[in-house]
Image (cartoon, rainbow, N blue to C red):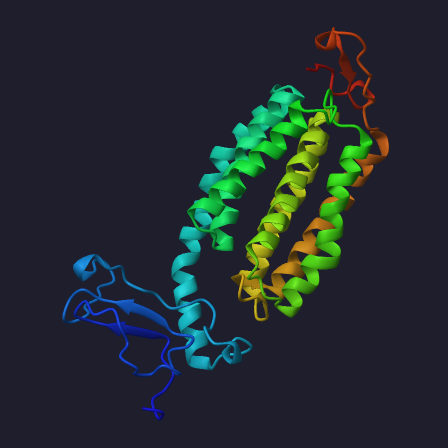
Length: 319
């Protein structure tokens, strides 16, 4: 059957979980579904035998089709996107409405060490998602998640010297390693599509990315909650601008193998929005200064306080 076209979806009915040497070459990039029923029946609202309706893929499956698609498939994607866009936007707005008050309360009300513990719980959940993304099995996933927790716990309560933030050597070492990774490894990794078969390498990369991001946020919150809020504003504005710019002008895929919905037009939109945000904050940054951390001596660490930026943030009790 060498004349047969290359399918995007192969369905084997009757409960048989085998291909029987048919279409082996053509099925190299196809999705395979083994259906329990004798006849595969799909409904948009309700599927037979407990199977969901499978919608069109947002990106081509085969590498040689990822650069461009014909007008018919593009029109189908646009139609599907127009139906799902309102739901996706409503989901994002609802998520933000729930999470933003919780984040602001933790940011401004929790002491530095307690904030680090709360944020570490979020990072542990992110570690579990990283393990799933990397394709770890049950035991390596557990090792990775537990290792992430132990690294954060050691940095908070171990000999790293956390009182009202970490010593500069700790911050430069951890965040410097992450910066080098993002600049010299992550960029060519995505651009050249390097293989990611080593679970050890993926675990090391996950620890560098997750622990460094957690440490940076905790350190910024210890200095001033407003610094964290400004940094988070960059992420929120960039993500929102990339979403709307990509929806309106997206044509060229950024990394189809990682996130088929991301486009270079969205990247440009995010850069423009963040540049405007930086210009809007520039007058405030000129008048502010980073608060000074007073070293605690003796056993009365709870009596230490930190001055806010120019006195605008008040006095904070540290632990």
